[in-house]
Length: 190
Image 1 (cartoon, rainbow, N blue to C red):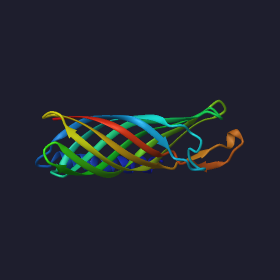
Image 2: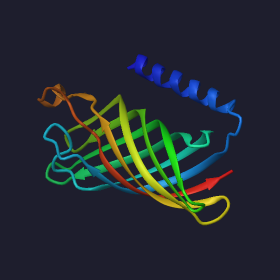
Image 3: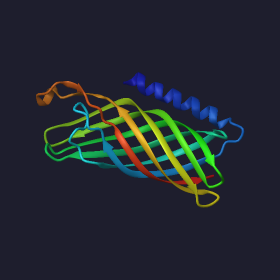
């Protein structure tokens, strides 16, 4: 686990320092929030209802059509039969390709990785495990002013940490704690 966290830190630091020296760096701060739809896999979050998610990100252009985005967020979903809550706090780095469609609309697609602090909590269980995860993102931004845009995005998250349920009579098993996120985005550029 320490090696994975160290690797994420090294990659994060490399991209941050490289981006800081980019010639035409422009940044933004964005707030994202919406619906988290957990996967429906037997070894995942089958039976969990839709939940919520939110994220705060800092992005910077490292090329006219390439953006790096550093994010921190939270998502959760609940399962009613066993009274369980599955949640995660992701720290992510995502690279985007931006495709402007005129002066008002930008399409963007991206992929990235992050470190996910996951948790399963219920009446008889409370387990926390951290692991590296991955995300694929696609979205659209609409400029509503020189420094403000609104938008929407869809994000697929895959993280598969191993939980130890032996203390509650179970086994060690991997639990896929990802799914789809559908977000509204408010972006402030500077």
